[in-house]
Amino acid sequence: MLLLLPPSETKRSGGVEGSRLDLSALSFRELDRPRRAVIAATRRLAMNLGTMAAALGVAPTQRTELMRNRQLGTSPVMPAIERYTGVLYDALGADRLDREARAFAHGRVLIHSAMFGLIDADDPIPAYRLSHDTRLPGLSLKPTWRGPISSVIGARDGLVLDLRSEAYAGLGPVPAGVRSVYLRLVSTGPDGTVRALNHFNKKGKGEFTRALLEDRVEFDDLGSLLDWAAGRGLVLRPGAPGELDLVV
Image (tube, rainbow, N blue to C red):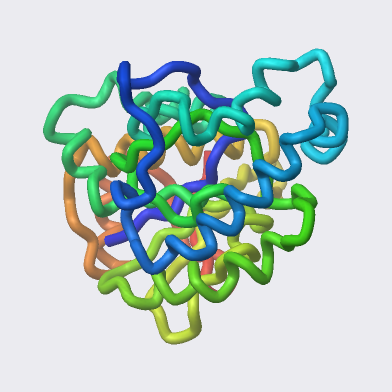
């Protein structure tokens, strides 16, 4: 079983004292080359804070956010699942998971970062600011990541649950032939009309991931996943081809 999560724009500051980014400590060494290319392009962008602020869509006064990209190689690191904040990761609550659930995330929960590609929940990363659609000098993120990330996903065994946004899924699609399902959060109106959720989408994905980690059960096929969800009181059902609808 493999869960693919999106990153978050917001990151927790700080990290392990005396630590710093070490690409050899990240999972999937086959991604080292695009990682180095993206980091180098980000550093070029960071040479001018005004230009970087415009490219990232942040105010020039948000100096802390901007300086993170200047300090990629020197700022402290922490596990990725703890680094990301925001609605999804607040609902997931890595700091509230027991030891067994936290350990279960290792190797099963991957986060799709625009900076580092696919990383394991435990991979140590610094705070940074980069989005899937950021324009970097001399480098385009989509062609840089699309092939390498798809290759990493294709090399994994078992069912892939894709909880990424469509934008990040486009930055590294699940290859054809891989057993995978894309999770959508929907609600059902009084008249039975199903509509996709926007505001509560991230919260629902975080809570769903937390439930999977708490129960620590491997799912080899879609049927066992649906059975687990029913036992958990979750309304999880097949949606469009290749998709699951989580009704909230």
